Image (cartoon, rainbow, N blue to C red; front, side, top):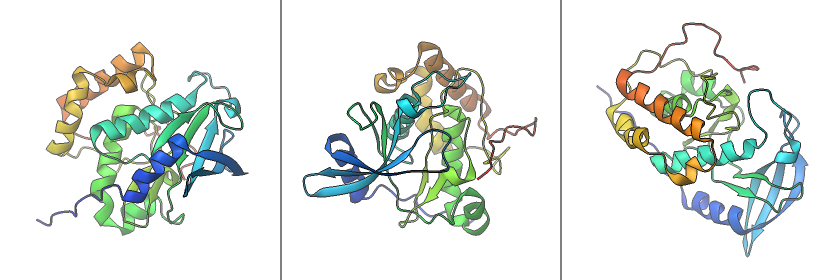
Amino acid sequence: MTQEPEVPTPHNDTLLGAEVLRCGQFRLLGQLANSSNETFLVEVTHGTEQVWGIYKPELGERPLMDFDHGLHRREFAAYLLSEALGWHQVPATVIRDDGPLGIGSLQLFIDHNPAEHFFTLFEHKPETHQQLRRLTLFDLIANNADRKSGHVLYDNHGKIWGIDHGLCFAAATKLRTVMWEFADEDIAQDLLDDIAPFAEQVPETIATQLSSVEVSALQDRIHKVLETGTYPRDVTGRRFPWPLI
């Protein structure tokens, strides 16, 4: 049996970028046209270091019936969960209240090939499947309601990143994703071991970004995954976001 390659770990430039996001001064470069909420590409500078970031101000959010205003907190919670699990698959994300349009999330821009997304990676790059399985599990426990194919990035180091997590962590089941290719497969034991502690206690840094009901629902989802030990199947055929990419 062929062993899949080891998942890449964060590079020094990614770790440095997180510090720049926390402490740097930033200015707007332009607005992203294909986002349902106002989203901006920004330049962030701290001393001699400079990175690009994605700024999502609360002020620019479109009102939703099923999610409270303040999606930036869910973006931040997703990053914190990814880090707490040791999976490092969500780009560094902070909350800044001093942005040009007020409080919002600021996420490290990942240099990537825009022609690559989940569908192309799954079909043409089997060496990424281990990372994709892990991201699929992340979406399952985070209850991601918006995993489009284009929300899966492939960087210059061969690492997979998941972005756009503003519609995560609802208490009710809202999973909508294009990533159903692993349905009915057994989940790797090392991944189950990673999530098991969170069934009993969610780190306070994550819990403070969510409601108490959402924290309990996160634990319930993890318990269910640990009981089944398999990736679920969409029996409805409707749990897809739109558009797909």
